[in-house]
Amino acid sequence: MTPSPRSGRWLRVALIATASAWFATSSRAQSTVPAVREVIIRGNVRTQATVILREMSLRPGAPLTDEGLQRDRERIYNLQLFNRVEVDAHRLGDSADVYVSVDERWYVFPYPIVNILHRDPKKLVYGLGLTHQNLLGLNQRLFVEGVIGYDQYLQGIYRNPRFLGDDDLAFQVQSGYFDQHPLSRDSSEEYEQITALAVASVGRRFGFYETMTAGLGVEMWRVPQAVAYRTASVDGRDLFLSASLQYVFDRRNLREYPTEGMYMSFLAVKDGFGESAVNIFRLGFDLRRYDLLSDEATLASRAFGRWVTGGTVPSYRRAFFGYEERLRGSFSQVREGERRLGGSVELRVPVISPRYYEAPFIPIPQFNVLRYGVYLGVFVDAGTVWYRSVPFSSVPWWGGAGTGLHFILPYGLVVRTEWAMNERGIGELIFDVGASF
Image (tube, rainbow, N blue to C red; front, side):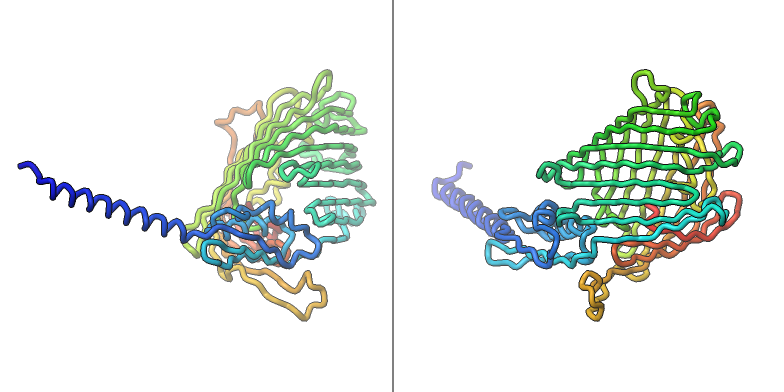
């Protein structure tokens, strides 16, 4: 049956009306997303506005979204320059003004240094350190530390995140001189070790989350009483160049104590060029993930490793557990090798969700707003270190599991009190500073 011309006209009218209605609805839906008209920053007394704007995706002309407001707030807070950051919007029809309100921190901190080396009161180390966290209001960092006594050293680090005025180019320089007395892991005997180093690096930031950094340095390590493996040179003195390349992807919500996001780091370092006795190549990786199980819990996981190839690995370039990396359950036990693998899983549940306490009675404004919270942590750690001469199949693994309370304190400080039991069923109480990862 052939449709009549009249029915064809009605069909075309119906199709046109449907299309027009859909287009109008779509246009109205799009018009409900306002565009940012202006960004207004308040509360930045010392910090320049460009430092804050660099972390924001909500620039004039960008569409306003709730996710954008949240992400910008987190990135600004991760600058570690402010006690509190609030990012809100005021809608004006098809546009909106974004308001950023910050409460600045105190940026200059002198601090004393006191240490008793190897638990011997006769081996006292004492000195002074100074850090400035926001030079010129441009988020430049300066760290200087010096001690005298049984150990002596002087070191300094300077970092500029906007090198040559480029928002995406960072520069860092580090130098130091150290006269220290470490313990030999093989004989438990103390020996003198003298170190001098100067390292410079340049980093390029891509977008908000990716960074590539290249470094070049010169190092001198000397042991007055030469012993095998304390240096690569038989005369007890190593002098060499070092070159490094590192890639970092960091999309954690809050770096001081992450509960969502992920982090990846890959590092390659070449120690020694030309005729240097030091000739090793190091690779490292660090992978972290933070998954929200609900509004009340986060499952955090981590895998990390370090791999060394090449010539003789001197003691100062070996891999350890018990220093910068630790296994809860054998927290203070030092284990040494040339290669390292490890991992952790941790459940984080808020007991007191992070919040702010306002203390207007404190005469210093930088301490009027204080952030605090408490988390319950349940964890499992595992890891191993080994020498290249040992088959990996015969390498022993160590681990521990336990629970504890993690205290979120003002100025980004995290303090952990934990109890852990190792693979042999031996328990220990742990007090540490900073998130486990």
